[in-house]
Length: 282
Image 1 (tube, rainbow, N blue to C red):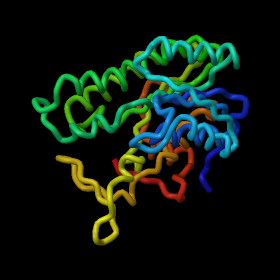
Image 2 (cartoon, one colour):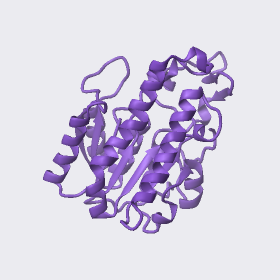
Image 3 (tube, helix red, strand yellow):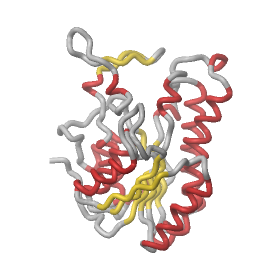
């Protein structure tokens, strides 16, 4: 049993950066619970990496929800504003915002590098799409979420608390968790819950490109952090189940303003990954 409830019928959700990866997994789980899910991303056509907003929306439909693709570059504030204007016009409500968009392929080339080898452009990339983009989406979504007493979930990382990948990555995730705390402070008394969640290592399409070795294992080495067996990694659906558990929890406000490990939420709410396991690799 997954432990995942339904109960999101009639609810409207937005998942940013959901063409693939963690965002796609979250969007699919929200759809499986019955939600109407707006899927944002730049990928309108197939490219080097698999996945488009249209494909994710189609899979949401197949899972039992309603998927709505919205092609959007989250550097474009006007486009983000149009998204939430459309939601108000067409649905009159918003219940869940998941701030997930992040350029993982661009960040991958700087893994394990000391700060003097990570150029200022990498800082801009991590903060523009990964901190600022989350602020912008939350800014435009807030009036709708206040009306519904909704939920904001920021996809963060244990890198907010310990060294991971490089200095820029850690500072960006720390900033995101601080954004969670301060938005929750501002939203106190409105009924809106704001949390960060920390997935572990997630076997996204990017990591699925890692080939098996002679023993059949798919191992990934993160410089300075160790070597990890991807057979033990989370699937993108696992953090999605955490979001659904929060969205359907009438007592979720007790968690507002704080970061939560996906594995710890799984232990509390009783959900598992799609193969029935709870992973703790981070």
